[in-house]
Image (cartoon, rainbow, N blue to C red; front, side, top):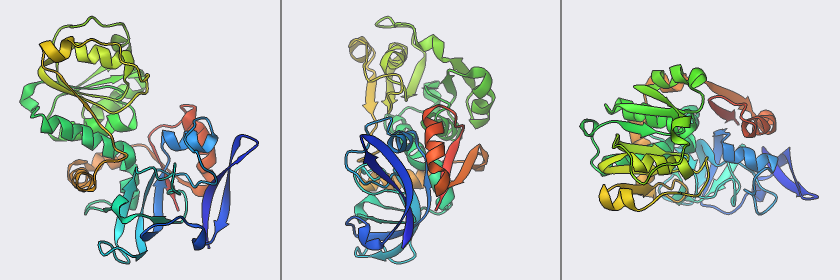
Length: 326
């Protein structure tokens, strides 16, 4: 028997409660995991509170991230005692996820935990950090170098943005961070490696088709008119890695940046990212993230506290990462 946070739908309302479960209740998979840590992401908050239509089938164990040790495996790639990490693949949405003391998963979804990271550190990185690494890799693949010019990061105080700043700074880039809370977040963003901080209001006005060329590369987590403004300000032969829609899923832009300035807009998906690319990204994260990243604000909670923190995170009342010790 093990404990899990189980979501049920009762009278069209999502109800979350801790339940003792037998291993036989776990869904099909090749590998049985003893979960050490999960994390609480915004999407998890929407799922647990029912504020977003994340869960389609009930009952469901939430938790889109997890890290732990292999208890048993039917796949030759993993053996008992191996440390693994998982993000994405619809886990915590369509397949029982990380907010349980045990999980049964497909071997193809797992990544060996790289040296330099333990389960807690892996969950401090989580989906957000993994996505950030994919964004940075997109700039590297486009041959955008520190000598190419300044890199812009929007939504800089969020999970993806903050990790992206750390990674870019470690690689020697000059980084401009965009945030809506300069007084609150400005000093932290500079500690993470930003060379300057810009108020988000500068990117919320409607953009002209083309504006002054400023950025050699950009990582955008916001979408909508912010991304449109960013595209209008990109240098010739630059790249924008887009991974979020916090500001909306529309894109009020024109083809002008693409056909007159050779701008590339690279979409970043972390959910169905191929295994080989995942392994490479996690290895890069273990090598590039400085110790200072793991010293930032992080709240460790128990499974019993997950529902409360889910409400808080959807109300914008959580600072830094929240990891759940199982």
